[in-house]
Image (cartoon, rainbow, N blue to C red):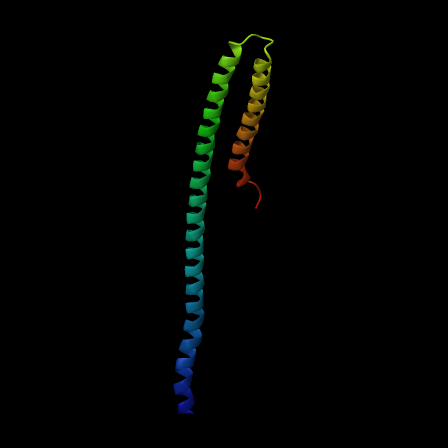
Length: 115
């Protein structure tokens, strides 16, 4: 019986430390997973911010261009065909700008939706 007792001690130690090791590894894995998720969230937020800034700048530049073209159209005679075509193009540009702004605003909120 003494031989069985010698084997029982290491077996009990193994049975105690194995679950402890398993719990520790799960804790480390969860911690690492949460850390990686936080890093990914930060990167995504930075990219979204850069996206919005880039598109806002682009939309402002297009708006400035349309204002310049509108000033040119205003200097033309009212019934001139070129002016009418230019004003039609400016109306389409205004629609494009409105859709662009809506999309940029929507892109910032798309990630906030339900997962």
